[in-house]
Image (tube, rainbow, N blue to C red; front, side, top):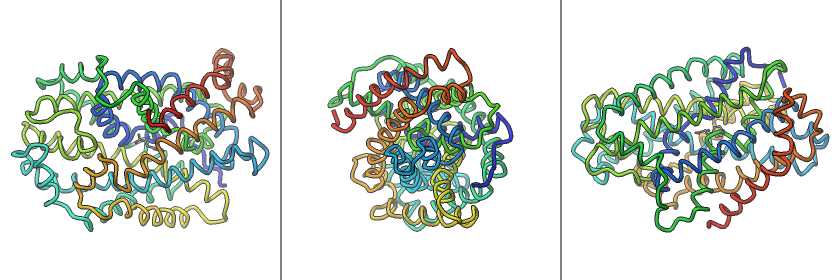
Length: 451
Ligand code: PHE
């Protein structure tokens, strides 16, 4: 594959943090915190980031920079064999990013559609509603062809960036988008600070809570770990794919920390922006499931002073965050195609973009717009099935295999060369061998069994 490395350290952090920060932070984190009771979920999520997420991310950096290829090629190079069972993780990763992007672009399309509509009309049509009647407004304002159109526009934007490769496409766009994203979210939190519901939101997010009915500590922990993996873009090779383009003189330990801190911070800030709005608006409650951002918040935006600016800023934030994540997913699946065929990057990107778009239509089909969101929350839509397949099975299995690869197949001197810091290597190597697989294994099995 062509050599197209990142130009600067800032570019690597922006692109990798861009991959990490996405709908998973802004939409997924808040609705999962909401439905898993708040504080307890958030604490387990932070533990999962610290004890599993960060080591796994460093693992992917080590694999990608050593292998200097996409997930499949890197693993083949490290194991010295195309037939090694470890290579499975390269393929499950590639399939995961394909499947996730297919429905991610649907949700990103909703965000883009909201933005395009509410910039013109404002949120007043939602104002008189409560969370239940809001779906009426959303239904009448939208329909399937329009949503497919916006999904297509979003995919086209993604393709337009990835087509130009790492340096001229992904790095350049991430360096512009990420600062904008930060500014918007800080402004939103500053606004939420002025609301009466702010302290209630802080309590909801950070004070350990009783588990919601029907959920065990295990199931909440499995949800928290799944969320941590998804949010940090782990277990799919997405980080391997960016790491292959990281120059040798870059310290991957600090990059890992910076990305993890950024991602966690944005998730928490998103919670601090969203929940005060929910708590300050009569009739809305946090356990709104997936409809939190698309049904509950617009009601609040319609009622509050300054709602036009805040609401549109929020949907712009969703679109930007989704875009830097979707380019990472497309790039991940694409590298495997480019490394296995002779197709050129531009043609490959466009073709893969079209196939992903067509497959994504399956997630749109069948139901109306909001009933789609509602069925997603009940767990019977196609979109939801894909989400479960990747979150519960493909991602944790992928992460486990990658950890075992570095722990048991890679030579310690190679790991040390990549980490280039004795103290960190002395902790990392035994940790990745003996501790990380057990932690991932336990939570993974809990997820499989649904306990
Ligand atoms: N981390 C992204 C999010 O939180 C999703 C993602 C997964 C991005 C896999 C790239 C690869 O939304």
